[in-house]
Length: 258
Length: 258
DNA sequence: CGATCTGTTGATATCCTTCAATTTTGGTGG
DNA sequence: CCACCAAAATTGAAGGATATCAACAGATCG
Image (tube, rainbow over the protein chains, first blue to last red):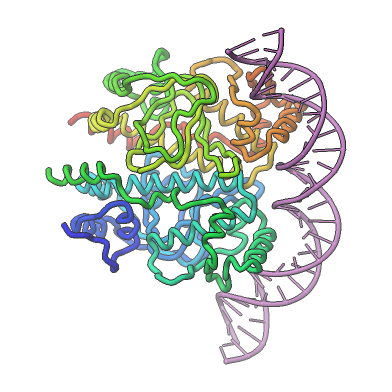
């Protein structure tokens, strides 16, 4: 039962072991959790609003987003989905999807069969706990998004988004450099933040002039994270990266002894 | 194993049986799920951001809201909490709360002990499923909120909020009249919808002039739901009130036979 | 029955949108 | 590898939705 957080693991393991240490058995089970892989080109729909929910999946590589469109065409992006993110884990309980999922760039996913998922969480308390945490974290991110759209102005919104993306990449991304890939267009950013593409562009210019960011060819480098955090008035608390409370650790250990 | 949806049940049973039929055993278990009750006056905090999470609770009577405040005082309400809503069901997994919960009016809650909760869902598959559905529904409501703040204008936002509150009251509220209690102030509505109180007031005047609503002394009557729905461009799909898919029903029935 | 919170109204300011044109980028096929 | 094309980014000018400020009226509650 060794520490399983060493580098060469898939995005799902990287993501989940952010919460608590997984055993080698857990890691092996996660490797068997997914079955077939699928690739999608850029700007393709992985799932469409109104459809009956299909199986859950993990995003392995690329980037996607959840979104909804109003009947006059206005679009709101709900979340950007990055490698390691799990989608539609419990969606079987619903009859029809209330939002779509589309790719931003070429993206590959691995589907998760419901039967195997249920069996896995029944036998692996740490995976169960980590999946719950993952869902809680998504809820918390959604809440931060609501705060952003409701009470932050354009500069604050963009500062928030960039911090969020960089922090998530640091927490369980794979690249160890000081910049991140920003594959989405300025229109995507606008649709995420409730702004117009034109205004997003202007704020980006401001940030460049203020030496806050370096953004070129979809590569983003934060030149002054502290100042961006102060602009957005945000800390990374909402990501809940602090790991499991001891009681949860103990409870998992106890269940593993059975 | 009779239908358990008849009137004289608590808000929790009313809420959960919206999803699937609960057995008499389930209803009895739900009655035993909560232990002590607590009353809070209006404008009191039930839980505060930064605290370590306490036990989960059900709101029995009154109204509350989740909210976050930025450091300069701007406040964003995340959700209004109505009777039957369950709060912080899995919060034990987190070390500190990322938002507060406060009352709008005098409110009573019933706490749920973690041990008893775990035992109950282990023995009652339908309760387990219904609680999962409840969490999914909350996620869907949160998504609709994001769409509202990101892409709807002031009139559309208020039309959305009023439909939402009325629909939720119809679905599992207790009063059978054609108006609902609207205990929150216009400032609360503004903080929910990302507007200023002044502007909320003006939109309300517009709605009154257009004979869309009748709002007086915190009693709201929708005079033309169809038109409000068209204004907000919304249907009640996002509330997922259609009940459990047959496979879930079957799965619960199978588990009950063990 | 007064103090305070809430609702209402008007005038002015501003952030962001809209519209429209131009440049740049990135992808594709020859 | 280059030429070409569509998509994305950029810039300017003007308009509109909502915010801000301020004052007052009305409701609520101890």
